[in-house]
Length: 390
Ligand SMILES: C[S@@+](CC[C@H](N)C(=O)[O-])C[C@H]1O[C@@H](n2cnc3c(N)ncnc32)[C@H](O)[C@@H]1O
Image 1 (cartoon, protein in one colour):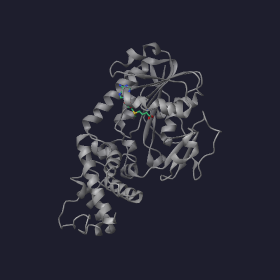
Image 2 (spheres, helix red, strand yellow):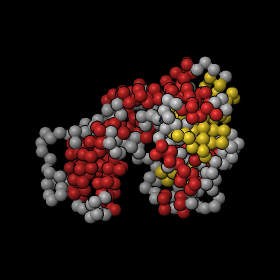
Image 3 (tube, protein in one colour):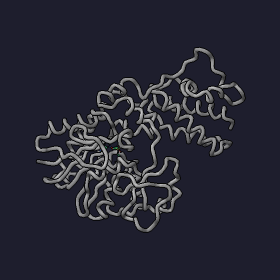
Image 4 (cartoon, rainbow, N blue to C red):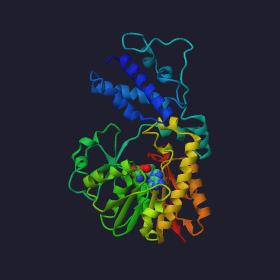
């Protein structure tokens, strides 16, 4: 593909990403992969370049752009080399017309920028939410010692963490194929450290998804005790078994939950769990480095809905923890609605509980918990709080 054809390809992909953002359709990554599938003429260099251009435009536009061309014109405004490729040649975008619509720049839609500011996230910190993330891995202590680590990494602040440059092809490393390392953001690893799961304990991962954190908990527990991975999404939870097998995590039991009826499925653990992790569904403002188009999808109503689910799941979790146990609340968001305010609401409505401020190698105290952010900590954005019964 010519450089100009790559720009036109990115514009076509952006049209799909914008449409999907409006209609709650597929994520950008999937749309990009689907776009290339029938276009066998595109080589790996073309794919990389087009993907890079599309993501550059997504990061550059704070509000949902009118269309793909307007989004790419935002990039062209700041990059004369890209502007020069709008030359009307074969497969290229048509020449730029004076007064043509250019998408608005900015970090996020105005209402979200306001909410971030109200949560103490200023412009510089908010901008860092869109930087390219490094590749973080966790050494899987269930298999460690058998293989050597890939070259080019350095220790991270997480106990078993290493950090590699973003472009590292970790899937090709022997350690990865053998399950001796897991790809996991440093912030995510740190939130698991707050659970402080120990061998022999009973630990419930209430929102386990495909098990990113469950696997870290299994390693901390050295495969001994009871580790229950729950989720309300059957497809996500079903992805856990093959991952657990690869990681040598043999202790995990899965439970599919019916939203609103979680306690019915988990009744046998009421008042019995040493630790419950609530890695709650949230807006994901802390993961824009990986899904920058997520900020085009979020609405105020959805944010309210997430906050309501978080409140409810915290209450469910509080009923499972034994006296002397602990409840860990995590969201990958920098918004107080899903962090400090949620934690203080829990304490206000659950008289028998108190906050037990986590101490980690990174993070800044925020209300009853800690906040991790790309700007201050170089991790994805997270809020984590720990509560203990009085
Ligand atoms: C932030 S994600 C979890 C990510 C996962 N812990 C990890 O580390 O990869 C939140 C999860 O909560 C799940 N969820 C939503 N409603 C739920 C409910 N009522 N009970 C349990 N899980 C729920 C979602 O399906 C989603 O997988």
